[in-house]
Length: 329
Image (tube, rainbow, N blue to C red; front, side, top):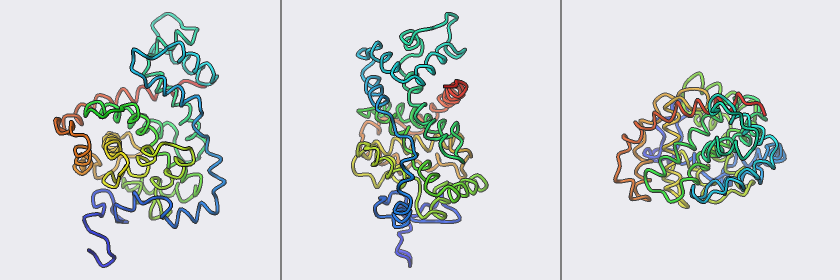
């Protein structure tokens, strides 16, 4: 133990430079963080300004999460039709050069068939995250969405590779893991923008600068929003512990999956606007150990093999995000 009582094995040496802190600070529950609670007491009403996840999205994701042979495409089209913005995006995307097959599609049923289940899912969640991200100055919505979507896709692929029982939950967890960045911009916009600028200038882990400037990170603030939105306990845990999976107790395997996907995306410059140094993907061992201890099938594969294969996903992700952002709702 050091003089300040911090175990040196629990200090982030790989990602924290100028402001080294205990890694446990990253997964310290929001209720135990005095700095965050002080801000919430003064500005709790500001959380109401963050657009919530619409009920239609929950229903649509539930339908799309069924086995492919059980998905009712008519119900999918009906659900999409209840959201005018989403319906317009689906029609435009189906007729875009990325998916268009020469014959214009003028019905939602046709658009659903053209796009397919996975692309419908990706497009459906775009509207929500775009509204959330664009509501805040200082966070590039395209960059935020690219990282969120990238982490969601890689999380789902990794979940399937290791035999995790619910790949679609891994997808949703990867999609929502960084909501705390939005919360920080709402609660303390100037300090958060300064932290973002410091991260971009130094290429250090954003959590380092958040903790220095705010006294908490996007992990704790994201937990607050997730509980406000009544996310399931395991999704809340992913948001809180994705930078410290060893602290997870509800669903450590899921947290480790998202943590590893997050590392890969950050390494591939699918982060929050800059590439971190040192490479986050070079420090995967502890997260992989958590995954293997809770999902035994992971021991049958090599992490390096999955990481190498993941490279092919990133160009697809960038292409998808670019196409989506060319579609004006």
